[in-house]
Image (cartoon, rainbow, N blue to C red; front, side):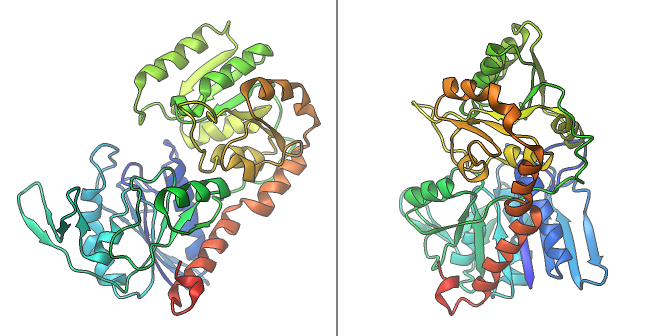
Length: 392
C-alpha cells in the first residue's frame, strides 16, 4: 500500500535525539513500522529528520521515503508547509492511488481534495495568493483518500466543505467524543503507541521522585503536580516544552514554585529524548494533573507520558481526564483522582502497583506495533471505499 504521511512543520519527524516532540515521535515511529511491514511510505517532515532520505527495508519490500521541506517553525503556519508538498501529494496519490494520513492542525490536504475552501464571508475560494503576489489555482481531487488524525483540539467547528468522507481519527474515547461534538461527524479512535524499551526491570530503579512530563501550560496542571509532591515531602522533577507555549508568564510561575519548594521540585524545562528516558527509568511514578474542572478545563487527548512511563514499569498518578481514562486502570497501573486532593490521597498507595503489570498493559494496548496495525486496518478499509467501513 502507498501511504503518504504529512507530519507537523514545527519539529522534525521523528525528532533528533537532542530534541523532543510528542506528535512527531508518534508519527515517526508509525512511519518506520509501516515500512517495516512492507508498505511504500512517504513521510513529509520539517528539515532535521534523522531519517531524511529514501530507505529500502531489506526482506520486507517496504520503502520509507522521508522528504524534508522547510526549516522547523512553530509560528510560520502550515500554508508554506502545504505549498511544499502540494504538488507531490496531488501527483502521487491525487487519484486515490494510496492513503493520505494527515497529522497537521489545519488540514490543508482537504483543500487539495475539494479544490478550494469557503472564506469567513462564505465565499468559495479556489486560488491561493502567495507572499510574492503570485496566484496558485487550485484543482479538486475528489478521488484522494484522506485520513486525518487530530492530536489536540480542532481549529474548525465543521468538517471540510465539499469533502464527501472527512474520515477523522481521535486519540482516545473521550477525545473522539469531544471531536464529534465539535465537528458534527463520526470519529474513529486509534490510541497512540510508544516504542517500548528493552525490559530491564533491574535497571529501572525507584529513586523516590515523581516525574512531571508535560508542556508548560496552565491546562496541564503542573502547579497541582508540584503542590501534591510538596504535601508529601517528595522530590519532583519537572520537564516539558517551555518554548512553544502561549503564556511565558505561567512558565515563570512554575519556575518560581520550584524555587520556593525547599529543594523538593527541580525545574528542567525542555529536554532531549535521552534525558527524558533516563528520568523515566529512575522515577517512582509519572504524575500529571490536566485541569478537568472550571473555566480552564480541557480534555487530555491521549497522555503519551503515561504510556511512556508504563513502558518502564512506572505507575501513573493524576487527574482522571480524557485519554488517561483509557490508559490507566485505577488501582492496577496507578491511580486517577477527580480532584488534586483525591490524587494526593493516593500517593501512599503507589507501593501497591507492580512494575510488571504496568509493562504488560502497554505491551498489550499501547505499543507502536499495535497502533500501526490499527491504522493499517483503517487504511485498508479506506482503500476499498465502495464499502461502508471506508466511508465514515
